[in-house]
Amino acid sequence: MLKDLTSPKIMTGLPGPKTREILELDRRYISPSYGRPYPLVAEKGNGCMIEDPDGNVFLDFAAGIAVVSTGHCHPEIVGAIKDQAEKLIHISGTDFYYKSQVALAKELDRIAPGDSEKQCFFTNSGTESIEGAMKLARYYTGRQYLVSFFGSFHGRTMGSLSLTASKYVQRKGFSPLIPSTFQTPYGYCYRCDFGGCSGECHCLDFLEKHYFKQVVDPCEVAAVFAEPIQGEGGYIVPRAEFFPKLSSICKKYGILLVADEVQSGMGRTGRMFAIEHWGVVPDIICVAKGIASGMPIGAFIASSEIMSSWGPGSHANTFGGNPISCMAALKTIELLENGLVKNSEVQGEYMSAKLCELMDKHDIIGEVRGKGLMLGVELVKDRTSRKPIPAVRDKVVENCFKNGLLILGCGETTIRFSPPLVVTREQCDTAVSILDRVLSEIESG
Image 1 (cartoon, rainbow, N blue to C red):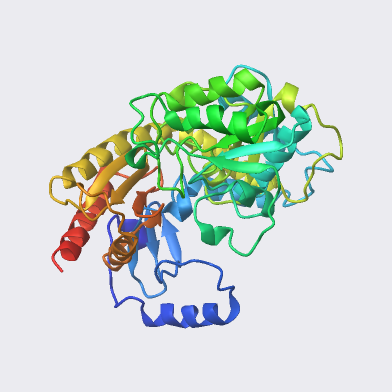
Image 2: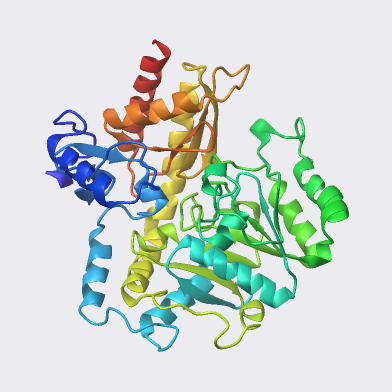
């Protein structure tokens, strides 16, 4: 049944009886630190559709937090996983060698921005990729300070959490964090901290003219970590001048630029890597999420000059670059290049236009922004005041679920649309129609 459906089908009240049983077990046995916005229990997945244990079918515009880039259970991904599982499941790539790990590193060298020879270190997740990049940056430069941006999300382990500045609840209770890290304003032009930038990116002037003069000598800064499009911070897209100017500042002081492409990479924005939209080549790139269509793997990629600065024993792990995950990633890259990156660009432009059309109908929509299939809709009390309405945003997310659409919030008051890259125009229309209906219901009472 699931394979034949391309739009939601709600069979029972939500949550249904079988779902409620699982929710009760979850409350008993799972850490309450998880943050679930609504009671979805996933039983099956295919393409952009998810079915719960009660037979309710949902249109998934969250994609496992932008992870299942090729859709749920793509047959070629499933085939690659099954084939590798019959040959070799684990041997530990930091102690031994195997073909799939080398093959994936070669592909990442080919597709990553820049003409220099590159090398990879494989990890299990995005946060571990950031942790490794932090260590590599300090090792290579011999410097201690690390800079990130307000609104950024780089992970939840202690190192990456020290760079994260998305929500205070993510840091509360875990201090002291890693020392010698600090944040500076990002290019969030809709809510500019400097009263509007007019293309001058005053936020970066603040970094250079204040932090680098009053707080830290830039010659002690190892790296600046930046998401090309901020994810958890609100799907924030900076002005065209932002990353070229940031890259210029980094080069001026010998600081490494690290692009956190964990959420924005692997075709999500209509380019293989989001940083390509600005023609900037970072020194280190961190990836995870969409790289293997749901299998756990991440990587950080750097020029051979930077990566070869550390030797055997400097950094390692047990499960990173697992053979099965590597094969899933190789197949994912093949599928991305054979049409899904282009589909992300095409469907993203179409859906962005449809969401912008809703602004004529709903004053609650303050801004529509994004690239490809990484789209954010910031909700406000009205476009004149731009007052954030986080409680209303959360209600929109919940009511979309009740209407069969899976989306997530981000930032203080934004909803995000990040469907699998196999999404069709019909499914984009369905998602926009559900949002339109939900906004109308909320606005009317």
